[in-house]
Image 1 (cartoon, rainbow, N blue to C red):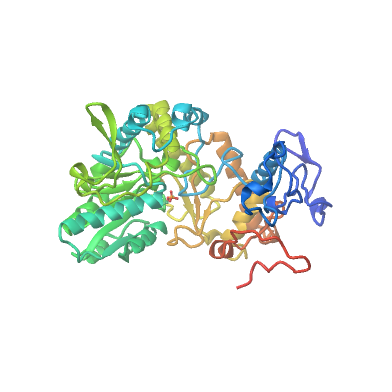
Image 2 (tube, rainbow, N blue to C red; image 1 turned 90 degrees about the vertical axis):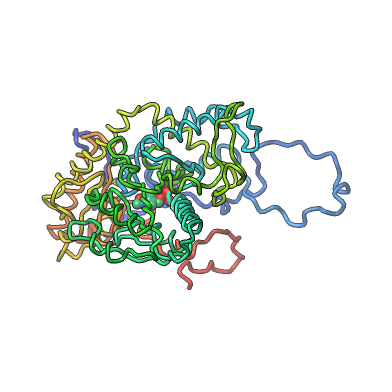
Length: 527
Ligand SMILES: *Cc1c(COP(=O)(O)O)cnc(C)c1O
């Protein structure tokens, strides 16, 4: 019998009685095993009863389907249960703390959802006449105003649909600005070794050659290395601040001064804006372009919960090259500037077919209004406080990658403390799943060996942070006392165990084919 922390029985199992036990059906506790929707037998079912068609097949001029349509046929309750069962196999911010570093998995306030579902927003058609959507355009205009005010930047392109898409938007604006100035020899983009993978990937996608900037022993950009690599061939630097080690770049003003002196632009990866919003305006740091992940800083859902949104704020130098569309105030209210022309002569093009993620604009704006400027600042301060609480509680046992001084919004540990145990960062993370906690970000940033990057966000209470730290300290104790199998065999209690995520990403199986009778399905690992 297991007892919870207040002594109430929670489950009858000790580890010994679970080991080797398998249910007869694949179910676990009250969770049922769930087949793919296509694997279910019902092919001819439907959720509605339709009357038999009175027109005969002769009306179809011979275009009668020869084989049955191979779609699953499920009633409404079967359909709902299928997706709810699938969702139960996954983790969600609504279930528990989701400490993925660099992802800012904060609570998604329900008020945002309520407002995004107002029919005046939710039922809009992107081709509705401008006169009929003044409220929606007004909201986009207000959201733009807040984003510009919070960042201290004069312009914003709302339409990019993710952080990475925003990076693409920013670099395309930078490329257009250099082209307009005849600076076509600028073919290099500098990124620090600790950069998120999307930074070099975006630069390469735009056609730039990527050059790495080194890092100092205390986890910041190496200024001397940056200065040595800047030249009239550099188009831009891409720097994250706070950086991916969870540290504020102390020399940010010097970084931007050196960059501008070399004629290059400063792209700031704004994914970590949650740590500084209301405290620091990137425009004051000399930033020329920065994406803002609305789905991180401004609480719109992500991680399977909804589409992202990555508006890009731009400096005065880059603003003329912003992609269309943008909202303008005209004599008859708001309108959308859609076409390159008199008012948008230098726009580099457009990023999206329409205007971007309207539903996410509503959620982000609701979040801003419900917090107010002071509330946004407090959220940033609490996010930093929570990360430092975790850093302080775990540092006695786990090795902090940069032990000196406080961190910003995320606490970074390395795997030195696991040396000689036979347990890796991956094993440790998998053991967290058995304890009911989603793992932290692992092996990122690459500059830290066996990195464990923990970002609690401001949403977590002190009690929840303590529960998390207690679990990690208990696991750490087990690791250091030689209980190796607890880690190498983990996860034992998850519906699925260690998956080949690399293979799944490189060779995704996106289509389903009915198995031929008598033919074994192709092995997943086939090269
Ligand atoms: C999340 C993140 C990105 C990419 O943002 P997406 O919205 O996932 O495309 C880029 N850089 C950093 C540092 C990030 O954390």
